[in-house]
Image 1: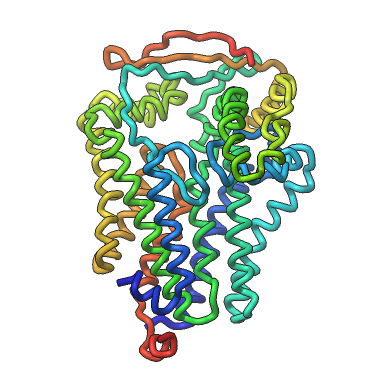
Image 2 (image 1 turned 90 degrees about the vertical axis):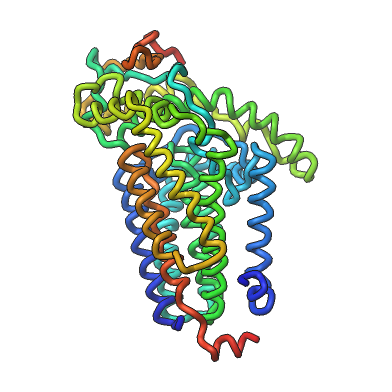
Length: 170
Length: 279
């Protein structure tokens, strides 16, 4: 048995392996906080329903919608996810700071946890300019006018149905 | 019998896999200096939040040269490890630990600035640790330990599908595909890829069969906790899972292919002499 062999020949490896397995069990049991490289691997395990409303973005560059089918999987992620992440960080970064602060206080690191470090200082204009630059490089075309639309969809009668479409205001 | 030759072969295999992974990151401009991040997304991760105490995230955003330096170290440190392993230098222990910790930091940064998931980077955090220690015995036991760690990780992905009840939901995969590919199918339903995606969303039984195959591939790893007899099938299962994940979900987990090497090289036994010396 491996554990017995490690005990006999390499106690340090046994220590690391036991630590990892214990931490993995604890983190998976508690659910929520993780400590990389000990992670939860529950991707796509929770129930998904077809009637769920899904939100995505359409990018309009100089009055023309960007056709995502012209780009690779990774390029599509590069086009869509910065918008999702930018909107997400506005809510999650302050919320995670509030959650982590008591924990860091307990271990004596709370004084070093300056809120400025844990939040982004960029403005909407900064993001727009940065994203426009990224997009120009990806589609290899200069963009003068950029518009992002938030669209919601649902699966209805065996087809994709658009529920709403509105201009995204960051 | 496990020999020095096998350790060197694994080191070459690791560097080749890493080169492909980093090449992919560089090609798509996902490395720090090309991506040029201006904001980060925090996560409920103690490691991430400890790293933020150093304020490295804001330094990266404001100082381009830091990004270039971090990218360079990320690409060159594995080569240093390869050199020290080949030359059997004692310093390889420290290089291996430094590389593992550095990759941990770089992965945390990249997954906070870009869409890349932290999960895909675990290979580059764990694999360098195999090269801690000079003797065949050190490599052997580290390899066996990492084999168990990866089995637990991969098996847990299957277990979560039972615990969170995704496995009991017949429309699970249809709904996942709808969510995963909505930005594509909302405008490209007539295209070849669009029509395939729509076919699987419409036909819940077919798509659920794919989900079930994924689950079986993940869950089957539990056998590896009890015997090494089926390791060659587990290698195949891992490769198949990664290919299916890329083809159906458009998710790139090729960074985990290096774990195939862990299963392949763990079949070599320690020589009697090594065993005797370590007793």
